Image 1 (cartoon, one colour):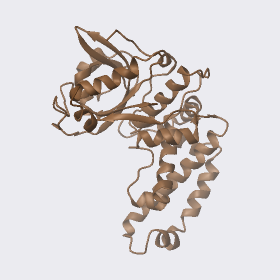
Image 2 (cartoon, helix red, strand yellow):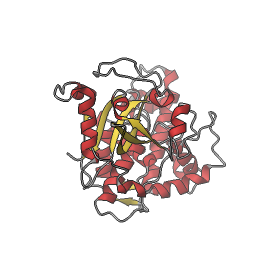
Image 3 (cartoon, rainbow, N blue to C red):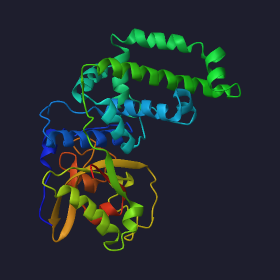
Image 4 (cartoon, rainbow, N blue to C red):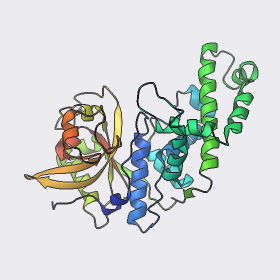
Length: 333
Protein backbone atom coordinates (compact mmCIF):
# COMPACT_ATOMS: atom_id res chain seq x y z
CA UNK A 1 0.00 0.00 0.00
CA UNK A 2 1.50 3.29 -1.05
CA UNK A 3 1.56 6.39 1.12
CA UNK A 4 -1.57 8.46 0.65
CA UNK A 5 -2.56 11.76 2.16
CA UNK A 6 -5.80 13.71 2.34
CA UNK A 7 -8.03 13.63 -0.77
CA UNK A 8 -7.72 16.97 -2.52
CA UNK A 9 -11.40 17.83 -2.14
CA UNK A 10 -10.95 18.15 1.62
CA UNK A 11 -8.65 21.13 1.27
CA UNK A 12 -11.84 23.03 0.38
CA UNK A 13 -13.91 21.81 3.34
CA UNK A 14 -13.67 23.54 6.74
CA UNK A 15 -13.13 21.62 9.96
CA UNK A 16 -16.45 21.78 11.78
CA UNK A 17 -17.42 21.93 15.43
CA UNK A 18 -20.67 20.25 16.41
CA UNK A 19 -20.15 21.58 19.96
CA UNK A 20 -22.75 20.14 22.37
CA UNK A 21 -25.16 19.01 19.66
CA UNK A 22 -25.74 15.42 18.58
CA UNK A 23 -25.29 16.38 14.94
CA UNK A 24 -22.25 14.22 14.22
CA UNK A 25 -24.22 12.25 11.62
CA UNK A 26 -25.19 15.48 9.84
CA UNK A 27 -21.67 16.94 9.93
CA UNK A 28 -20.32 13.66 8.56
CA UNK A 29 -22.92 13.53 5.78
CA UNK A 30 -22.30 17.16 4.82
CA UNK A 31 -18.59 16.45 4.35
CA UNK A 32 -19.25 13.34 2.26
CA UNK A 33 -21.52 15.21 -0.15
CA UNK A 34 -19.29 18.28 -0.35
CA UNK A 35 -16.21 16.15 -1.04
CA UNK A 36 -18.14 14.43 -3.82
CA UNK A 37 -19.26 17.78 -5.26
CA UNK A 38 -15.80 19.32 -5.27
CA UNK A 39 -14.11 16.20 -6.66
CA UNK A 40 -16.65 15.93 -9.48
CA UNK A 41 -16.40 19.39 -10.96
CA UNK A 42 -18.48 21.64 -8.70
CA UNK A 43 -16.53 24.89 -8.45
CA UNK A 44 -18.81 26.48 -5.82
CA UNK A 45 -16.25 25.87 -3.10
CA UNK A 46 -17.58 28.79 -1.05
CA UNK A 47 -20.83 26.91 -0.48
CA UNK A 48 -20.68 24.17 2.13
CA UNK A 49 -23.61 22.03 3.23
CA UNK A 50 -25.20 23.10 6.50
CA UNK A 51 -25.34 20.26 9.03
CA UNK A 52 -27.88 22.22 11.09
CA UNK A 53 -30.34 22.41 8.20
CA UNK A 54 -29.58 18.81 7.23
CA UNK A 55 -30.57 17.75 10.74
CA UNK A 56 -33.88 19.61 10.45
CA UNK A 57 -34.51 18.02 7.05
CA UNK A 58 -33.86 14.60 8.60
CA UNK A 59 -36.34 15.20 11.43
CA UNK A 60 -39.01 16.33 8.95
CA UNK A 61 -38.44 13.24 6.83
CA UNK A 62 -38.69 11.00 9.90
CA UNK A 63 -42.13 12.37 10.72
CA UNK A 64 -43.21 11.76 7.12
CA UNK A 65 -41.98 8.16 7.20
CA UNK A 66 -43.70 7.31 10.47
CA UNK A 67 -46.98 8.98 9.57
CA UNK A 68 -47.00 12.49 10.96
CA UNK A 69 -45.57 14.82 13.55
CA UNK A 70 -47.71 13.55 16.41
CA UNK A 71 -46.76 9.93 15.80
CA UNK A 72 -43.07 10.85 15.49
CA UNK A 73 -43.27 12.66 18.82
CA UNK A 74 -45.16 9.87 20.56
CA UNK A 75 -42.58 7.40 19.26
CA UNK A 76 -39.74 9.28 20.92
CA UNK A 77 -38.24 10.86 17.79
CA UNK A 78 -35.88 13.73 18.62
CA UNK A 79 -35.72 16.90 16.62
CA UNK A 80 -32.35 16.81 14.89
CA UNK A 81 -30.19 14.51 17.00
CA UNK A 82 -29.30 10.86 16.63
CA UNK A 83 -30.10 10.58 12.92
CA UNK A 84 -29.39 7.88 10.37
CA UNK A 85 -26.70 8.94 7.90
CA UNK A 86 -28.02 6.65 5.14
CA UNK A 87 -31.46 8.23 5.39
CA UNK A 88 -29.94 11.70 5.61
CA UNK A 89 -27.97 11.24 2.37
CA UNK A 90 -31.24 10.34 0.62
CA UNK A 91 -32.88 13.38 2.21
CA UNK A 92 -30.11 15.68 0.97
CA UNK A 93 -30.45 14.21 -2.51
CA UNK A 94 -34.06 15.41 -2.56
CA UNK A 95 -33.85 18.58 -0.43
CA UNK A 96 -30.49 19.91 -1.64
CA UNK A 97 -27.65 21.65 0.19
CA UNK A 98 -28.42 24.79 2.17
CA UNK A 99 -25.44 27.09 2.71
CA UNK A 100 -23.47 26.50 5.91
CA UNK A 101 -22.04 29.99 5.61
CA UNK A 102 -25.51 31.56 5.46
CA UNK A 103 -26.73 29.63 8.51
CA UNK A 104 -23.55 30.51 10.42
CA UNK A 105 -24.06 34.21 9.68
CA UNK A 106 -27.63 34.05 10.99
CA UNK A 107 -26.59 32.02 14.04
CA UNK A 108 -23.93 34.58 14.96
CA UNK A 109 -26.69 37.00 15.92
CA UNK A 110 -27.51 34.76 18.89
CA UNK A 111 -24.04 34.81 20.45
CA UNK A 112 -25.12 37.44 22.97
CA UNK A 113 -28.54 35.85 23.52
CA UNK A 114 -27.91 32.14 23.97
CA UNK A 115 -26.02 31.15 27.12
CA UNK A 116 -25.84 27.34 27.42
CA UNK A 117 -25.89 25.98 30.95
CA UNK A 118 -23.24 23.34 30.31
CA UNK A 119 -20.70 25.69 28.76
CA UNK A 120 -20.94 24.20 25.26
CA UNK A 121 -22.99 26.09 22.67
CA UNK A 122 -25.26 24.09 20.38
CA UNK A 123 -25.20 25.14 16.69
CA UNK A 124 -28.84 24.20 16.20
CA UNK A 125 -30.07 26.01 19.31
CA UNK A 126 -28.02 29.08 18.40
CA UNK A 127 -29.62 29.11 14.96
CA UNK A 128 -33.12 28.77 16.39
CA UNK A 129 -32.48 31.49 18.98
CA UNK A 130 -31.28 33.87 16.28
CA UNK A 131 -34.29 33.10 14.11
CA UNK A 132 -36.73 33.81 16.94
CA UNK A 133 -35.21 37.27 17.39
CA UNK A 134 -35.33 38.02 13.66
CA UNK A 135 -37.96 39.13 11.17
CA UNK A 136 -39.48 35.64 11.37
CA UNK A 137 -40.51 36.09 15.01
CA UNK A 138 -44.14 36.77 14.02
CA UNK A 139 -44.25 33.26 12.53
CA UNK A 140 -43.34 31.83 15.92
CA UNK A 141 -45.93 33.95 17.69
CA UNK A 142 -48.56 32.54 15.37
CA UNK A 143 -47.37 28.98 15.92
CA UNK A 144 -47.56 29.35 19.68
CA UNK A 145 -51.03 30.88 19.43
CA UNK A 146 -52.23 27.96 17.33
CA UNK A 147 -50.98 25.43 19.85
CA UNK A 148 -52.81 27.09 22.76
CA UNK A 149 -55.87 25.10 21.65
CA UNK A 150 -54.05 21.88 22.30
CA UNK A 151 -55.17 21.09 25.84
CA UNK A 152 -58.85 21.14 24.95
CA UNK A 153 -58.95 19.84 21.39
CA UNK A 154 -55.61 19.22 19.71
CA UNK A 155 -54.01 16.64 22.00
CA UNK A 156 -57.09 14.53 22.83
CA UNK A 157 -58.06 14.38 19.16
CA UNK A 158 -54.69 13.60 17.64
CA UNK A 159 -52.88 11.80 20.43
CA UNK A 160 -55.75 10.12 22.23
CA UNK A 161 -57.86 10.90 25.31
CA UNK A 162 -55.95 8.39 27.44
CA UNK A 163 -52.68 10.33 27.24
CA UNK A 164 -51.20 11.20 30.62
CA UNK A 165 -51.62 14.99 30.96
CA UNK A 166 -48.08 15.42 32.29
CA UNK A 167 -46.70 14.50 28.86
CA UNK A 168 -48.69 17.15 27.01
CA UNK A 169 -46.37 20.14 27.72
CA UNK A 170 -43.34 18.21 26.46
CA UNK A 171 -45.14 17.11 23.33
CA UNK A 172 -46.37 20.62 22.63
CA UNK A 173 -42.87 21.98 23.08
CA UNK A 174 -41.54 19.47 20.57
CA UNK A 175 -44.29 20.24 18.07
CA UNK A 176 -43.73 23.98 18.31
CA UNK A 177 -39.99 23.54 17.96
CA UNK A 178 -40.19 21.32 14.90
CA UNK A 179 -42.81 23.55 13.29
CA UNK A 180 -40.63 26.55 14.00
CA UNK A 181 -37.58 24.83 12.55
CA UNK A 182 -39.54 23.99 9.41
CA UNK A 183 -40.50 27.64 8.97
CA UNK A 184 -36.94 28.75 9.66
CA UNK A 185 -35.22 26.55 7.10
CA UNK A 186 -37.86 27.22 4.46
CA UNK A 187 -37.35 30.95 4.80
CA UNK A 188 -33.59 31.08 5.25
CA UNK A 189 -32.71 28.44 2.64
CA UNK A 190 -35.05 29.62 -0.09
CA UNK A 191 -32.29 31.28 -2.13
CA UNK A 192 -29.35 29.50 -0.49
CA UNK A 193 -29.81 25.93 -1.75
CA UNK A 194 -28.05 23.99 -4.49
CA UNK A 195 -29.14 20.73 -6.10
CA UNK A 196 -27.73 17.42 -4.85
CA UNK A 197 -29.84 15.04 -6.94
CA UNK A 198 -26.76 13.65 -8.73
CA UNK A 199 -25.05 12.64 -5.49
CA UNK A 200 -24.93 8.81 -5.33
CA UNK A 201 -26.58 6.85 -2.57
CA UNK A 202 -24.61 5.50 0.34
CA UNK A 203 -23.17 2.02 0.78
CA UNK A 204 -20.98 0.45 3.44
CA UNK A 205 -19.67 -2.53 5.32
CA UNK A 206 -20.87 -3.50 8.78
CA UNK A 207 -19.17 -5.34 11.61
CA UNK A 208 -21.25 -8.41 10.83
CA UNK A 209 -20.23 -8.38 7.16
CA UNK A 210 -16.57 -7.94 8.05
CA UNK A 211 -16.68 -10.86 10.48
CA UNK A 212 -18.21 -13.04 7.76
CA UNK A 213 -15.22 -12.46 5.46
CA UNK A 214 -13.17 -15.59 6.10
CA UNK A 215 -10.64 -14.81 3.37
CA UNK A 216 -9.41 -11.52 4.79
CA UNK A 217 -10.63 -11.75 8.37
CA UNK A 218 -12.42 -9.09 10.36
CA UNK A 219 -9.82 -6.31 10.45
CA UNK A 220 -8.56 -7.17 6.95
CA UNK A 221 -12.03 -6.88 5.43
CA UNK A 222 -12.64 -3.56 7.15
CA UNK A 223 -9.22 -2.15 6.23
CA UNK A 224 -9.49 -3.29 2.61
CA UNK A 225 -12.86 -1.58 2.24
CA UNK A 226 -11.45 1.75 3.43
CA UNK A 227 -8.22 1.45 1.45
CA UNK A 228 -10.16 0.71 -1.74
CA UNK A 229 -12.09 3.97 -1.47
CA UNK A 230 -9.02 6.03 -0.62
CA UNK A 231 -6.76 4.56 -3.31
CA UNK A 232 -8.91 5.28 -6.36
CA UNK A 233 -7.90 8.00 -8.86
CA UNK A 234 -10.66 10.22 -7.47
CA UNK A 235 -10.63 9.15 -3.79
CA UNK A 236 -13.67 9.68 -1.62
CA UNK A 237 -13.80 9.95 2.17
CA UNK A 238 -15.23 7.15 4.28
CA UNK A 239 -17.57 7.63 7.24
CA UNK A 240 -17.05 5.56 10.37
CA UNK A 241 -19.55 4.85 13.13
CA UNK A 242 -17.92 4.04 16.46
CA UNK A 243 -18.09 4.56 20.23
CA UNK A 244 -17.19 8.08 21.28
CA UNK A 245 -15.58 6.32 24.26
CA UNK A 246 -12.61 5.68 21.93
CA UNK A 247 -11.93 9.43 21.80
CA UNK A 248 -12.11 9.67 25.58
CA UNK A 249 -9.88 6.61 26.11
CA UNK A 250 -7.31 5.73 23.47
CA UNK A 251 -7.13 2.16 24.80
CA UNK A 252 -10.87 1.53 24.49
CA UNK A 253 -11.90 -1.34 22.18
CA UNK A 254 -15.52 -2.17 21.44
CA UNK A 255 -14.63 -5.37 19.57
CA UNK A 256 -12.07 -8.13 19.96
CA UNK A 257 -9.57 -8.72 17.12
CA UNK A 258 -11.99 -11.23 15.55
CA UNK A 259 -14.86 -8.73 15.63
CA UNK A 260 -16.86 -10.19 18.51
CA UNK A 261 -18.32 -7.66 20.97
CA UNK A 262 -16.19 -6.81 23.99
CA UNK A 263 -17.08 -3.47 25.61
CA UNK A 264 -20.32 -1.62 24.94
CA UNK A 265 -20.53 2.13 24.42
CA UNK A 266 -20.91 3.80 27.79
CA UNK A 267 -21.04 7.36 26.46
CA UNK A 268 -22.65 6.83 23.06
CA UNK A 269 -22.02 6.36 19.35
CA UNK A 270 -20.29 8.87 17.13
CA UNK A 271 -19.60 9.43 13.42
CA UNK A 272 -16.54 10.95 11.77
CA UNK A 273 -14.86 10.84 8.35
CA UNK A 274 -11.65 9.11 7.29
CA UNK A 275 -9.91 11.22 4.67
CA UNK A 276 -6.44 9.72 4.24
CA UNK A 277 -4.12 6.79 4.85
CA UNK A 278 -0.43 6.09 5.30
CA UNK A 279 2.04 3.39 6.38
CA UNK A 280 4.24 3.77 9.45
CA UNK A 281 6.68 0.95 10.25
CA UNK A 282 4.67 -1.37 8.04
CA UNK A 283 1.36 -0.65 9.73
CA UNK A 284 -1.59 1.05 8.07
CA UNK A 285 -2.98 4.21 9.62
CA UNK A 286 -6.10 6.20 8.77
CA UNK A 287 -6.46 9.96 9.04
CA UNK A 288 -9.63 10.66 11.02
CA UNK A 289 -11.26 14.07 10.76
CA UNK A 290 -13.54 14.74 13.71
CA UNK A 291 -16.16 17.44 14.31
CA UNK A 292 -15.04 18.73 17.72
CA UNK A 293 -13.37 21.82 16.27
CA UNK A 294 -9.90 22.56 14.88
CA UNK A 295 -7.98 23.29 18.08
CA UNK A 296 -8.13 19.77 19.60
CA UNK A 297 -8.76 21.08 23.12
CA UNK A 298 -12.22 19.57 23.57
CA UNK A 299 -12.50 17.97 27.00
CA UNK A 300 -14.03 14.83 25.42
CA UNK A 301 -10.56 13.88 24.09
CA UNK A 302 -8.10 11.63 25.88
CA UNK A 303 -5.00 13.81 26.39
CA UNK A 304 -3.06 11.37 24.20
CA UNK A 305 -5.34 12.19 21.28
CA UNK A 306 -4.95 15.91 21.91
CA UNK A 307 -1.18 15.55 21.80
CA UNK A 308 -1.26 13.99 18.32
CA UNK A 309 -4.18 16.01 16.95
CA UNK A 310 -3.58 18.43 14.10
CA UNK A 311 -6.40 20.81 13.19
CA UNK A 312 -9.10 18.42 14.35
CA UNK A 313 -7.50 15.44 12.58
CA UNK A 314 -5.32 12.60 13.82
CA UNK A 315 -3.78 9.38 12.58
CA UNK A 316 -5.24 6.15 13.97
CA UNK A 317 -3.92 2.62 13.61
CA UNK A 318 -6.20 0.81 11.14
CA UNK A 319 -6.63 -2.22 13.39
CA UNK A 320 -7.56 -0.03 16.37
CA UNK A 321 -10.12 1.75 14.20
CA UNK A 322 -11.55 -1.59 13.03
CA UNK A 323 -11.90 -2.79 16.63
CA UNK A 324 -14.01 0.25 17.43
CA UNK A 325 -16.08 0.54 14.23
CA UNK A 326 -19.68 -0.56 13.90
CA UNK A 327 -19.68 0.36 10.24
CA UNK A 328 -17.78 2.14 7.48
CA UNK A 329 -19.77 3.94 4.78
CA UNK A 330 -19.19 5.82 1.52
CA UNK A 331 -20.98 7.39 -1.42
CA UNK A 332 -21.21 5.27 -4.55
CA UNK A 333 -20.66 1.61 -5.23
